[in-house]
Length: 179
Image (cartoon, rainbow, N blue to C red; front, side, top):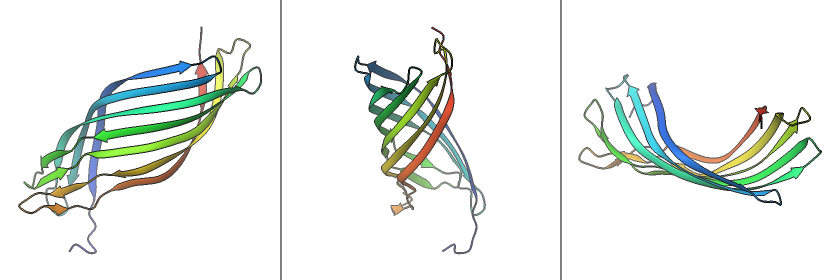
C-alpha cells in the first residue's frame, strides 16, 4: 500500500448549461415552483506525485426541483417566506483513460436533497422598491455517492466520495425592484 505517502491532487470543474423555472403565486400567498436544468460538467484532474493520473472529461448533467412555500405578512413593509424544496441532480457516468493509460469508469451519480427554510424581507421605502432580506435554511442530502472503478483487466472499486447529511446556511442581501 501507500501508507504514510502524502498525495496532492489538483482539479478544476466547470459547469455549462441552462434550464427553465416556473413559479406560481396563488391569491392565498401560497406558491408552487418547479425547475429543470441540463448541461455539461467539464472536469480537469491532475495527480503527479505517484504517476501521471491526469484526465480531462466532459459529462452530461440534468436535474429538477419542486418547491412550495407560504408568504406571510409580518408588518406593512415586512414579509416572511417559509418554504420546502426537493432537489434532484444526476451526473451521467463515463469511461475515461488517464495520461498513465489507466482506464476508469465513473458511474452515474445521483444527488437528492431537501431544503427547509425561511427568508424575512423588509421594505426600506414607501414604494418597496428597495428591500433587504435575511434568511436561513437547513438542507439534508440523502445519499450522494460518486462511484468509480479501475477497469484495466479486473474491475477494482475505488473509494467512494460521499455527500450525506445536514447543512445549514444563512443569507443576507438587498433587492432593487423598480416597477
